Length: 203
Image (cartoon, rainbow, N blue to C red; front, top):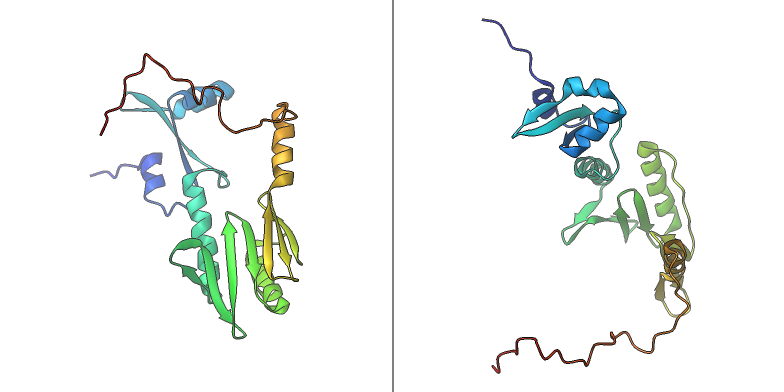
């Protein structure tokens, strides 16, 4: 009895996903083969569709599996530091440090770390950098986080959150004329009755 060598597909799915697999289907396969015809040798047919299994050298940003891999890696690192995930928002983790709560909130690889003691924040940053490399860090009362301007106001203990500059940038990039002023958000046909439409039931 001879042992059959497993197909690339089988080897992908029996591994632990750390090799970053990618499955292309249909037109995506044609595009890849046009770029490099040698890939045609690796195309298979599944359910009457062309399929191409690839092994990426690095995780591809935007893929569901790579996002999950990063989430697992980062959360495990935080748990190892003594943090507990918030059961209502799994991208927020808390830990009691020096008698006060330290909170880490994140979106992919953008983090916000807060604690009343600056030395605690610095210590957490150093531990994260030791695992994942140098980060761009801002500290103080004003931050830009994912296009949002966040300002902590010491005088009254409030927080101001604005996206004005981000919106300006988005409008400028869109090329639209945003100089016109509208007296209302309503469309022109708000009070226009369409006589041909089916009337609603009285109840």
